[in-house]
Length: 189
Image 1 (cartoon, rainbow, N blue to C red):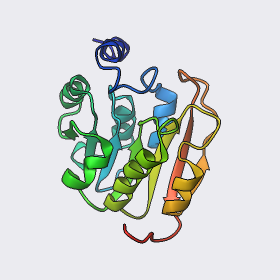
Image 2: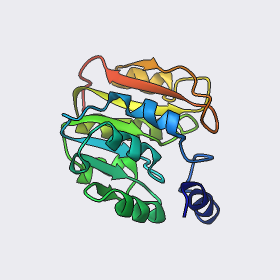
Image 3: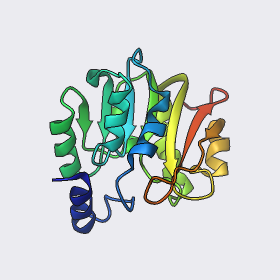
């Protein structure tokens, strides 16, 4: 089954688990994986979906054993386990990574559409990721809107600065990728 047909089947069956309108395109996936290097020891992808971004991450030379995937949809998790043996696939929401994941992550790549989420949910996801990341590591987030995918209050709460990519027109819908890094240690993390 193709990524697109699996995606739409699951979108119809489990709409609360699928928040994107289509799987991430290859050009956007490559841009999201740009921060990955083969020498990284631990990376997490949250909202792994059908695995387009996973493919791009592994295509950068990261060993599968260094990659943990978090996905809410069980059918997507089954597909990820089949397509990417050696990765650790967790059928859990991103904010649960603090309970099962590896610490000192070199990067977190997020396909979770955070822009429409309330600040409290954005903060829970980003806060969990930051707890698991080494200082200075990148939190990479895709977005489809004109604004940064994390609210100003969440960025301020965690002391995040960001860079953004050019608009990626070869994606449905057109996307932009933001790379967030923490400026300072945040109390409570």
